[in-house]
Image (cartoon, rainbow, N blue to C red; front, side, top):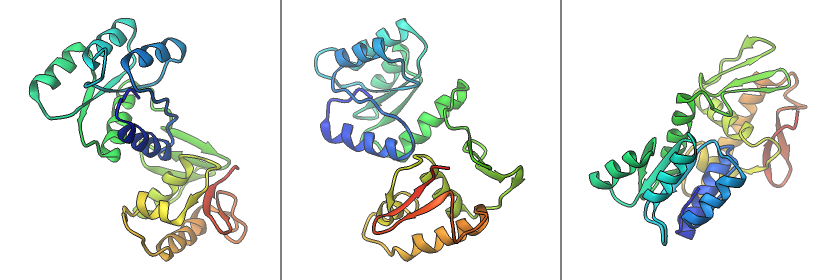
Length: 219
């Protein structure tokens, strides 16, 4: 991610990390190009309005060096900026203020188009999660999950081993931006465990971390 605004950069980095992405964030085009030479990413999120070398020039240089997908971020829905960015080699764009879920959807879409979706099919012990097809199976048998149960599983399994507080899960799964009722989370966890665990009283996948919240695995 190449973004000069610290608040935007840190907010998007946190949100994308919660969705299971590994994010490397820098604040200038020059730093971004240097990072690209050392570490080839799966996708570049590029702000067009950068100090020094602007995003259009950064985009042209990235495209000249290879075919890594580029999603540009523009401060306004200006047709001229969008057209110029696409002509410079960008694959897609989002307009500020960027909604993390919109950016996540664009990232997944562009990765699917080139067949490089990192998390399309995941195996966790006997559990198989198909993020692209939104299906779950255990030992080859499909597991029927309600939409909220599926979203909870996708959120937890996106970062195995990471502890999620109940409030974090309320914000990411239920989209409650205020202090919500943690009983929603606990009840959904119990339903999810009943469907994916061999013994819901001794869970392997969705584990409780007392005093903190829940984590997925490790299996």
